[in-house]
Image 1 (cartoon, one colour):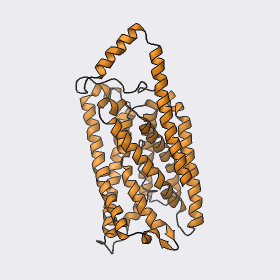
Image 2: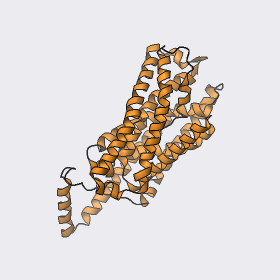
Image 3: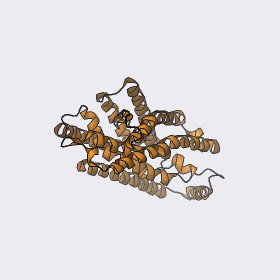
Image 4: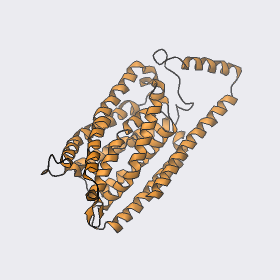
Length: 344
């Protein structure tokens, strides 16, 4: 587990370093090629950029915000590294599950729960940090990107790709399997589009903030699936600590899913109405229709799962002692909502 954490940290740092290096190279090249005419034009553009959003939409936050398909190949090594680390981690944890918990009835689900203890906190941190960095202006929300937003999309895309194959091995209801597969495919399309074009990073990271809920949900499943000397991990924890985690899970579900996704949709369309020439007019069909469609799917799934989450918390607090635990429907392996689009 420590090796997986270390490897993912190295991949994230490498992603940030490459992105900063890429910026410096472009800035240096552009500076060397400036003529007297282009220098004057640049000075005028910078003057316009300093004006507030409500007066004149600013120019692109980064020199390469309008990227082309060649961007994909520049990220190839990072994608392979992120995917490779996750494959290695899953393989190791699958073996750990079979060795230490041979009686478990779904080793793939347990391996996914174990690796989620690393993935979800890391992705939530990247999504929150990038959203805060890019939220301040219309230009940064639509055309800006940072090292953390880049890393989040990288992790999200590779996570979705691998999880699409993992859910085939995990025991799922047919309806839930179809919904999760649809969600994963749409999210991969969105994350890939953002990496290729270098735009919409804020929106992908904002949706990815929902992974905060997955951190608390993973804690629930660790307590229910891990056994130590024949007893569940939950039995070794103070009741108040397990109950506190359940309350935080419920609160985070309300704030970071049921409220967050409508907020995403409202602010998305407010920006489009306020600055159509810098948003709708330069967007491709994926950004116009698929992005909000993914958020709508996530809102629908979250609304559906809010009922078992609420009942599970009530049972944990002793308010529903005879109720069958419907949180079993919310195994992180079955309900992964990465927003690589997650981002999640």
